[in-house]
Length: 126
Image 1 (cartoon, rainbow, N blue to C red):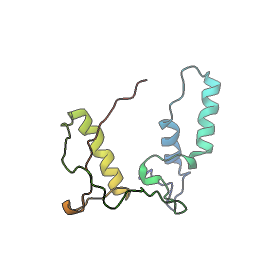
Image 2 (cartoon, rainbow, N blue to C red; image 1 turned 60 degrees about the horizontal axis):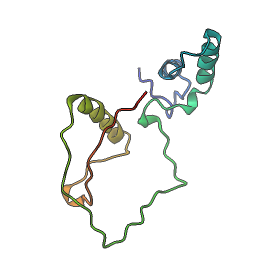
Image 3 (cartoon, one colour; image 1 turned 30 degrees about the vertical axis):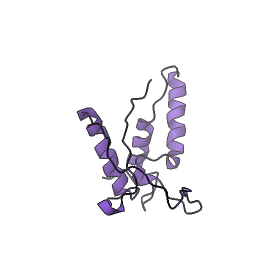
């Protein structure tokens, strides 16, 4: 039972998907129970605007992002990546897998590499 149905024939209002969307939204503790119920109903009504995964993000063809890089520019190809901690790996690797599965990223051959940059994961402050 796949709940990632926003872009499929089952559509964004499959009950299991709507429930997952409603449960994924964080509602403030300052809401009254009535306000929380209204907020959950509003989220359910507009479940089609939420993506549960990058796989549900609809690509657009009306805009292209192009970097204006001079043809003779060179960039570092030396890797200065600090080893990721176990929690960082547990977070990052599934995200990268999802991005590859969604067609956002892809593996490339080593001779296709133009530049390398370190990945820095920063914990959000709440």
